Image 1 (cartoon, rainbow over the protein chains, first blue to last red):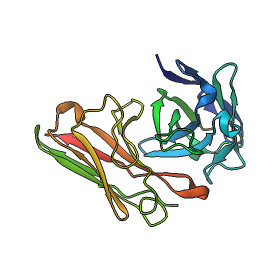
Image 2 (image 1 turned 30 degrees about the vertical axis):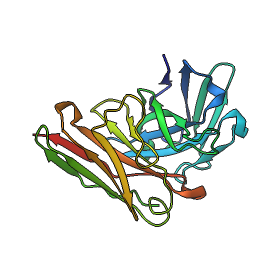
Image 3 (image 1 turned 90 degrees about the vertical axis):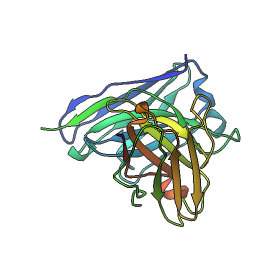
Image 4 (image 1 turned 120 degrees about the horizontal axis):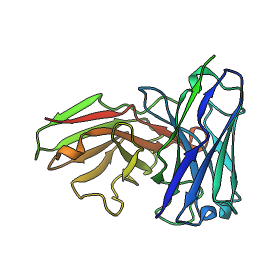
Length: 127
Length: 111
């Protein structure tokens, strides 16, 4: 079964760091881009960042709201993507999801959409 | 980059049709055909319903259809069913600075 599962969420104090993991199964991890998203309490979805497929050198892009604080990396051998979150702020409190990138044309530089999502992991930033 | 604008809520009786609008700008919806729609039930992960404006992934009922005109994309649910009651979000690619922007979300209620 094709699936993604996030882990690593929890309660963290402002200014501290946390690393989330997104474990893939049922497909070849390196063949796809992988994005992170978040959804604050009672709020809508927000794109956080993306790591491109191996074909596109696994390069990364980030939303302006997290650029310089968050870093996405991937371990193809383990099929895991990571979201390293530093200098966390209370406004980073959210459920964090990972999503597999989908390209209708094949081999696209950035996904058209996101077809497989994990169930999410909750991050609470509070003192 | 501001979120795309969606109505807060729409409702309809079983069997009816509802349409959700998603208004962006000439920097996102208006210029790229990479609009997707996601269904989210409470406490659950989003599910892809439409991609590339109007294409349906395998397994999504053909009651769901998408379209776009200018800076506004739309999702139509025909033959509304109880299980369609959920939040719906549009998403558009927005270029190489913003990358992806989501809509504000619409709650669909089946009366």
